[in-house]
Image (cartoon, rainbow, N blue to C red; front, side, top):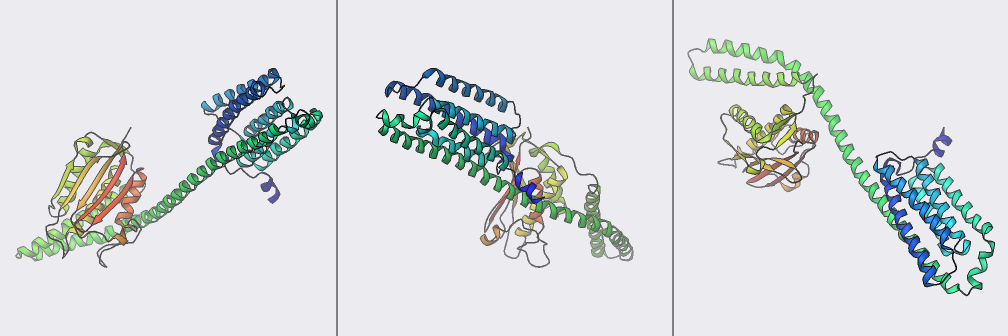
Length: 430
C-alpha cells in the first residue's frame, strides 16, 4: 500500500492544473520569441553557418502546438498530468531539434533541459516527472550521437569567446525562467493556504452552529410547557388581583413577554426541519419594518433609520428571518450599550449605504460606552462578552458573523467611547 501511494503521489499543483498550464503556455510563447531572435541574430549578425529552413520548421511546429494548447484551454477543458508531461516532452524534442542544427551538445543552451526537468517536478506527479527527466537525459545523450563532430566546432572555428558568452546568456535565461515560475507557484500556494485557513475557520463556525442549532431545537421543545404554565399562572394572578391595577399591569406584561418567547420558539421550530430559502429583497424597504418591530418590543425605543440615496433600490439575496435575527442582535447590543449607569441620552441609528465592489452596507451605530481596543479582536468569538455576569452569553456577534458569512458578506466593527459602528456588507443581487 505504501509503495503504491508513494509512486502515485500527486503534484503539489495538481489541483491548479488549468492555472499552471497557462503559465507553461506563456513561457513557451516567450521561448518561441527568444528562439526567433537568437536564430536570426546568430545567423545574420554573427554570420554563423546555421541552416534556417530546418530551424524555421521546428519553431513553426512548436508555435502550432502552442496555439492548439491555448485554444484547448480557452474551451475550459481540464488538463491531466499526462497532457502536461506530453507538452514538456514536446518542448524537449523541439529544443533537441534546434540544438542538433546549432552546435549539438556544445551549444550553451543545453542548460534549458534543466528548466524542463524543474517544471516537471513542480507541475506533474512523480511518475510523469521521472518520465520527463529521463526524456531530457536521453535527448542530451542523443545530441552526442547525432552530432559527434560538433564537440570541436566551437574551438576549431575560433568561436570560443562566443561560446562562453552564450553559456552566460543561457544560464541567465534559465535562472530567470525558474525564478518566474517558482515565484508564481509559491504565490498560488500561499493563496491556497489562505483559502484553506478561511475554509477551516468557516467549517469550525458551521460545526458550532450545528451544535447550537441542536441545543436550540431541544430547548424550544422543552420550554414550551413551562411557558404555557407561566401564562396560566399569570392569568390566575390577574383574576386574584383584579382590584390592584399595578399588579394587573405586571401580569399583562408577563403574558406579553411569554407570548414573545413563544413566538421566538415557534420561529425556531419552523426552521428546524425546513431550512429557510433565500429571496431577493430591497434592503432599504426591508430594514425599516425589522427595526420598527424591534422598537415595539423595547417599549417603543426610538431608532433612527436612514436610507442613503445611493442605496435605494439595491437588492440582496438573503434569508430574511436569519438576517432579521442578525439585525435584532446588533440592535440588542446597541440597546445594552446605551442603557447603562454611565450613559445618558442614548441614541441608536441604522443606515443603509451603498458599498464598494457592488455591495450594500447595513450600519448599526450607537453612542454607548464603546468597546475596549483589546476586546475588538475577540468580537465574534462564541461565549465572549464584555457585559457584566448574567447580562449576556456572548453569542450575539458570533451568530451575526455566522449569518453574514452564510450570505457571503463581511462584518466590521469600529468603536470609541460614544461612537460604536457595526457594518454588515452584503453582495448586491445580480
